[in-house]
Amino acid sequence: MFLEDKILNLTQLTRMSLCLAFEKFVLKHKVHFEINLLNRTTAMIKYLLFAMSVLLFCSCSDDITFNSPAFQGVRDTVFYKADAMRYELTDAGEVTIYGSLGTQTVQLVLPNYGEGTFELGPTNAARANYTNVRGKVFSTNFDGEGEVIVERASDSTYTGTFRFRAVTSVDTTEVYFTKGVFYEVPYYFEPVPPVLDPVVPNSFYCRINGTAFTPPSVSASAGPNFITGTGANNTANIRLRLPRTIEKGTYPLTDFTVDSPYQAAYFSGFNTLVQSGTVTITSHNTQEGSIGGTFSFTAQGASTIQVTQGTFGFNYL
Image (cartoon, rainbow, N blue to C red; front, side, top):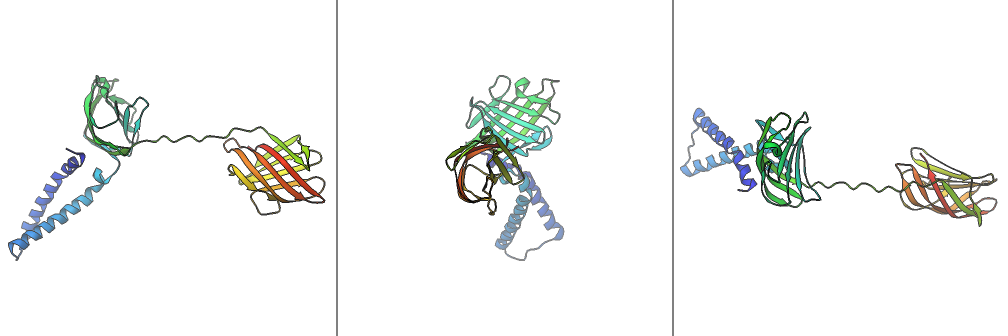
């Protein structure tokens, strides 16, 4: 029997009750249909179809065919419906299906991927664990038993049923799970941690009209939106200002007087205006506040200034 067939049986008693209630309604109000037998039969079918539609609509919030994914069952006598669920596949090939409700967790551990019936117990490879709200762990490995039936394992989801009796090793108390169902429980893809760029050393170098410029003072700071780095000695000062969220890539440089997120400035006894240039970001570790790259630009003042072969490493936090 497929899971869908089992689901239909869950509402059978409720539907029978609805039919009996409908019959009582007809008798109480002495409803008379002054139509032929065929029309009376048609009317009854319409009423029953409408009533069944109402039943299905009202009960859909608890029907796993309308909730995908789903993980639910009866713990002792209490309905257990997980609010978080997933399955994981280990390097050893084991499958673990999780269904968590707050701090409670059910784990179904199966020895291999695929469909089939898995017996639970101390001598079986498959096992079921339950952790209650106080952190007490119950397991079929201690002295329990049960069964997990995987009916469908495809499209990165698991569907099936389960039941088990699990025991805690602390005081030998037991917990029972019956009528357990897991429906289209998805595979858990572990997020790939981001690869961070290395922290670069503080550095600054360039050539100014062909002459090497290695300033003894290298500094950097950051505001909410921008990073500002400076290389300076007694005769010259070069500044770069870049967006705090800048990523690797090449960007056009403009003067500080221009409304642009990528700016450069040169000062050496007289003011200049940066005409054009580029900056290339080769590394940016935003967690550590470390950025590095290359730059070049042309500035115009009392004379033309060519800044070439520029490299920098700024630590701004």
